[in-house]
Amino acid sequence: MSTPLEELFVKVRAENRAALIGYLPAGFPTQEGCIAALTAMVEGGVDAVEIGYPYSDPVMDGPVIQAAADTSLRNGTGAPEVMATLAAISKIAPSVVMTYWNPIERYGVDNFLKELKSNGGSGVITPDLTIEESEQWIASSTAHDTNRIYVVAPSTSDERLRKVTQATSGFVYAASLMGVTGTRTSVSSSAQSLVSKLRTVTDLPIAVGLGVSTPDQAREVAQYADGVIVGSAFIRLLQESSSLAEGVDKVRELAKDLSRRLSRA
Image 1 (cartoon, rainbow, N blue to C red):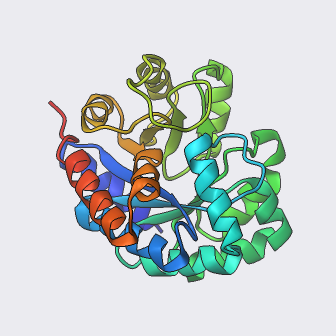
Image 2: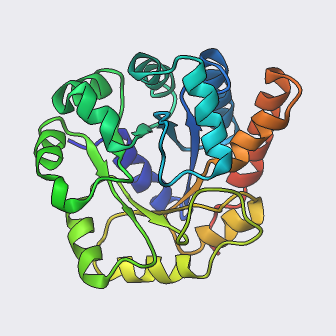
């Protein structure tokens, strides 16, 4: 049985374009504000959504997302709020949760997956979970028909790329560079090289994240990747707006601008 996420990538491949994937931490800028902003993203053309599980000690998040996660944690965001956001947004777009491993382990692996599926989730991105520590996760996520999305980096060896992609489903998250999330003036040239290497070891869709923030960058990445992941650029609009309504409008407009650039030449 395929997930909505898997069906999305079949659809966009048939349309000869890349999927636009938007990220926002649950509970930011507020619980209701997060759902409003994610809804605006989808209205603007975002194809799939990553809902971040805010964490106090991130290893992959840059300063923009860290600040948003801090706000979310101060708002009291935890598993119930993450799942409530998932329930709302999965009705309008394929949705996954991006979380470090500790919250899953504390919640209980099977309980987490049951809640995820009951709230419409397609999968989970686990940036700090290694293949060597994934035995339980692989067994449980398979049993719950949940996509396992692992993150690979430009430094990942060819042998390890093969191992990681064999355990991955949904899509492979290709980090465009060595470092943390954040907006940048250009997309690293290592992103295209990484995608090319991945093409030799897997037929799975490949989505590129870390540093994609402008329509021109999205267009560039869409020429070689199956998905374009944007997070910090959306968050920054919400952080810099004078009101939630203004921020939501700006998020919708950015999604429109990004989505127009995803067709392949």
